[in-house]
Each structure stands twice: as C-alpha cells, then as structure tokens.
Amino acid sequence: MTRLVHSLSVLMFMLLPLAVAAENSTRAGEYTIHHNALTTDSLPAEVASAYGIQRSTSRGLLNVSVIRGKPGMLGEPVHAKINVTAKNLYGQIKPVELREIVEDKAIYYIADFPVAHREMLHFQMEVLPEGENYPVQAQMTQEFYTD
Image 1 (cartoon, rainbow, N blue to C red):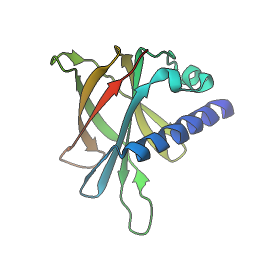
Image 2 (cartoon, rainbow, N blue to C red):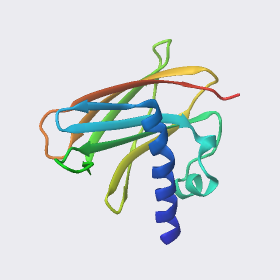
Image 3 (cartoon, helix red, strand yellow):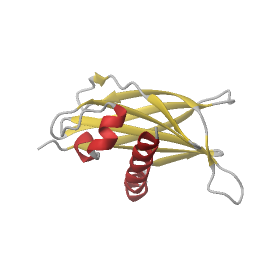
Image 4 (cartoon, rainbow, N blue to C red):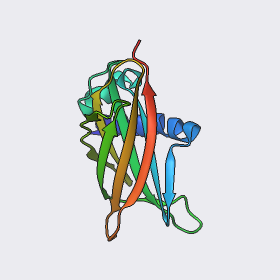
C-alpha cells in the first residue's frame, strides 16, 4: 500500500508541472479544472504498473482534477462526475473512460487510450462538481507524437 501511495504521489507531481507549463486549466466560478494529456511512455514504470497502464508512445493519458477555490488557500480537490468526448480532426470520436483516483486529500481522474502519430485530439469535458447542480465546461486540444 505504501508503494502504491508513493507511485500515486510520483504521478501527481510528475503531471503537475506539465499542466502548469502548458497552462491547461479552465476557471469557472469558484472551480478550476486542471487538465493535461501526454503519451504513456513518459510515465515511470512503477507508476504505470500501479495504475495498470501500458507504457507506450502509441497510448495517450488524460489527467483531470477539479479544485474548489478557498480564500487564502490553494484550494481543495473535489469529487466530480466528468464526461469526456475526444474527437480527432476527422470528427471521429475516441472513447475516453475516466477513473477516479483518491490519495489522501488529492482527487484526480485519469484515462488511457490509443493514439496515432501526430494525431490531434480535441477534448470536450463536462464537469459536475459534487454538490453542484450545473456542470462546468472545459476543453483542450493536444497533439500526440508517437515516433
């Protein structure tokens, strides 16, 4: 269990700089939706193993977290129902099934899926934070390089 918690921590800290560097976040009201995507070959082997993710240049990973703003604080992660539609440039829809990961106070959602070289995917996310009546919309576009 300790190794798994360590693996999850490694994943969170590994993905956070990618989200910050690309500024892949959407702010709506008191919520910030952080979202990023990458190929799974960049995951450390122990993290991929802990999540049951195949490390490959031809597999993508989407990571989403929902943070409720708190005055004087960085905010708090919240549970959410998230529906994702991923479309390529031809309008073809790729299935993206998110699964929730909870580690201590961190809550995030991940999905892995096949990608082709130079495939550009547009992700449309409908996020319903726990306790809210109306969803927040977020979107991002990511090109994947598999060679």
